[in-house]
Image (cartoon, rainbow, N blue to C red; front, side, top):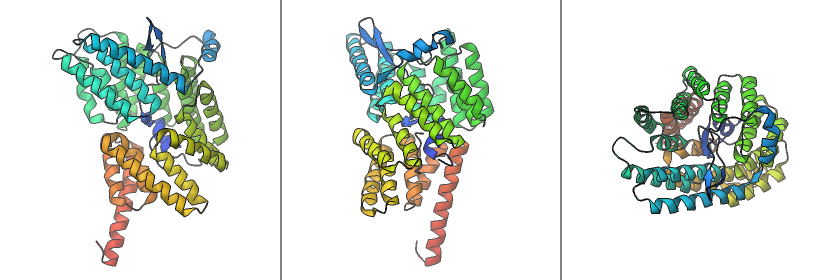
Length: 415
């Protein structure tokens, strides 16, 4: 199983482990890998599309069935709604050249699109909107939380504390803002491997406002502490208040990953299918279905799914999966072609957002084993931003591979 950081079959794959700690690649990410909260979904508001906050309060169990029944959409429809929201917000920004808040809203919407699409282009657009907002804002003001969320999504964790500290100086802060601040500090603690501090922060944020986001964060921390049953119960609670197709699909995905970590591949696939029913055509769910099918021996169907996902996303991680399938079938020429394409894709993404792409690309280089120095460079970069146990393990693996090559070179007189 290839290593990557969007998302773990006998032993969980690194892609799944990484998604389980809330990292995007990619989604992934993504998705994204790389996000601290479940995604929001667009809805109509005042004649234009708007984004519903992912931190909306959880609905009561009495209305859960109705909420879940309404929480069905397609990837194309969600993307179209977000595009309409972005167009409307761009129009308002053009009419308000001195309003940094509308530019923050535009950045938020590009972040939502990035979580859905997995495209770095959307992160770039969000970054540009935030830069413009800070240019307009008065000294000491500006979209600090949104920039912190962007940097968290891109694994640029060394840039986040300064923005959170600036936000903490705000004189008037409502409960939602305070919970968001505490929650993101706890997200950082989790990425640093500071599990006790992370759980304390998540519990504090949930005590202020027990939202879908707060419950999902607690579930993640319980998972990392080894309490898989407790984590699953919390994800079930979060699912009751998911309130949107993407939230529901994402929560089912996380429950599937928990099943995968337990070694229950068929149960994991069932959760993926439930997520697929909430948001039809979402590539992130599709690729996990493909991975599960491959693990269950349904390789032809898995390959067809991966081919379709690659055609839609050009994601190099899924090219790696196709290369592995070809290699397992003895088709060396096809495997080599996919591996070559995957490496080029990883390097392109690394050139744009190295911190975000490092963990994804690291899996490729560790699995191939033909460029141990590059793997070590990426592992060190990944660990510098996220010094948690998984990143430490990958760094040790890369160090061992690089050391083994150095030893072999010395033994043969090569440099």
